[in-house]
Image (cartoon, rainbow, N blue to C red; front, side, top):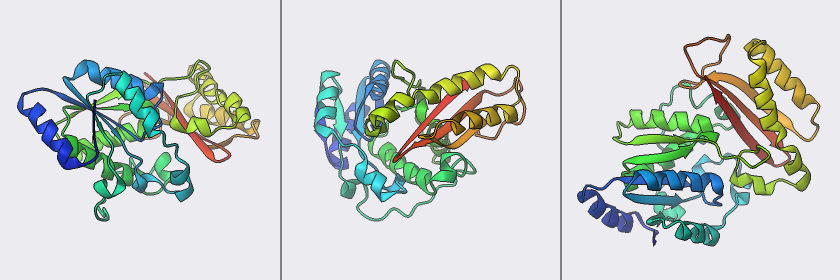
Length: 280
């Protein structure tokens, strides 16, 4: 495994791979790796002849400086994990390497960055688009792999690829969950013991809401979910929305022409948990 810290060194290696006609897979991460990340790595390794995993905590996508400061950083453990998985290349740039000067680019993402997480975190997805476009430029991957837990991000990155006319494939990978249903996230380590014990309630509620979709309207489902969290004093329901999977438009009534996504965000003290459930 080779660890690169500059784009130039990385490019020299990847150019040789690309010139030989081999495919390159990219798994972008912010570190603090867990089984959700490793599932992306395994899929990417099985579908490409070379693999790059990036580790970079991107400052431009954090609205709250405290959240950026407290984001878990476990680089040594991350590298050990990737070494054990026989990853070819790891890209670990500094902030100065990725942002030698201020990035003032703004991306026309339509309404995708103004709903759900975008409504709660102004500018977040423009920051995501900034760093992802930089990583795509540095790696020039054949395929890039993203988890469906950050579903809105996945939709936005697909839009970004079209917007920039990039010749790469975005591969969506299923949510990896703990045995009790909690979606794996690097932020989960910040939950207190009591919060961690309560957290599976989120996924349980999503599954029950899906079951009720056979008898209740979307508006009735939203009211029911809201009522469930009113009985959970340690959880603050920031939003629960029922949207179409392609453009994140709200679903007012059930139909058979679109796939439906239940999207949710819950605040536990200082920790936000997002989750979703996708179904036909």
